[in-house]
Length: 239
Image (cartoon, rainbow, N blue to C red; front, side, top):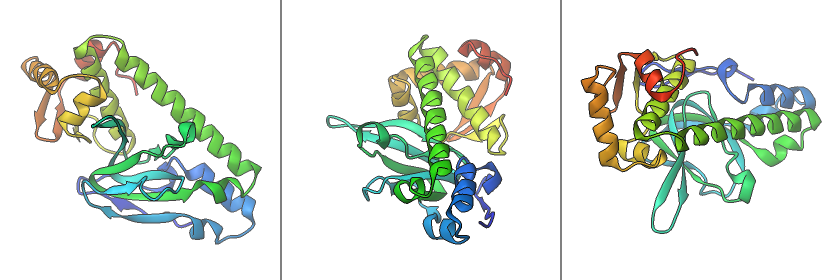
């Protein structure tokens, strides 16, 4: 398949070599014996504007990778909508529906380019492809479980610092600076995702600015002291 690049307005570019689906695509091409199968299955699309639903309303079980921008997974609750995960460039989404069959809505929080690959014809292509999909699912579930456990333990400041440091590292993996990067969600979403009231989050962010650990300019973060933030989160700054 061609190694198409997409860049967002802040300079993030993801190629196939940095994509979470790269091994699935490789095995799909290798196992099928049809050079054009992958090109027929994969759907590259974008830019999807901020606030648009990019997947989840069509009932199609598919894997997806953010090529640029950011995406959140939303689950409807009793009169509310919960944002449960955020996905950055190179990261995989779509496995949430495997557990109970309920596909969340995936919403662009900034303009997004993405790739989607339908699950059913993908896993039917051969054992090697199915194994890659299963391994990806295991890695994603393990990562999300560790994140949830980290956010459930510790006080409010620890949760804020841990989430912020995690986002910094993930932006760095996509090629963006770990010291200056955008928040991929609004403060209201951020607070809800880590179980805090918006006012509590605002007070903690103001405290981080007072300590000169970080500065916040609308949706942009300047991380001034990663070591101090890691200490607050009980983490290490090693990538």
